[in-house]
Image (tube, rainbow, N blue to C red; front, side, top):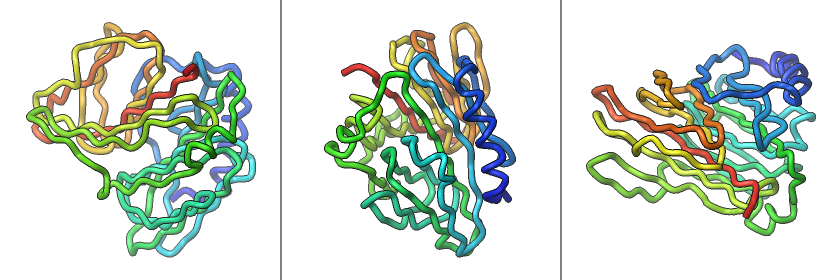
Length: 249
């Protein structure tokens, strides 16, 4: 189980190297004992993601050095009460929160089983505008079970938000379910960088001319203008978050 002192030890080198490391399009496997992804991208000086696990009734507060970074918090398993800026809510698995830079946040395990959640920190190369994020609604929390859902033979689509944040003029996150045998779409490209976070099942990810297997818990980073697609080759539905950040309006 990851404890706060372990996270602090991991954070220091991650932030130090984020200025020079370059992340390639690839599957970054989930690992409960170390960061999942850490480095820089075309648009980000820092992209750093890890998971935290809390025992029942335990509370976690972000390390002080993370307070200046905007972030996403995503529940992997268990139930938590999340306080993020002015937003406060009890949420369950697959739920997500956007925490605007400068907003304090804390997470408490409200269940009897261990709680595990992702923290994705990021910083843009272009200076942000925190007031823009506050004007767009500030920090927010989205409970999975209350999301609108559109279904089809291919699977399902759940929008979370498409709005400005403190770092991005446009920040777009949705969840996709792929039924067995279906692909998300033909391989395509776009200027926008993207993260695919697998929350259930398995998919085959194409990045360029390479095909990778990705399982629940893994993070897929997609560079700008790299052909990509996801296909469910298993016998069970697969679900993932698609996270896109736009650095220009």
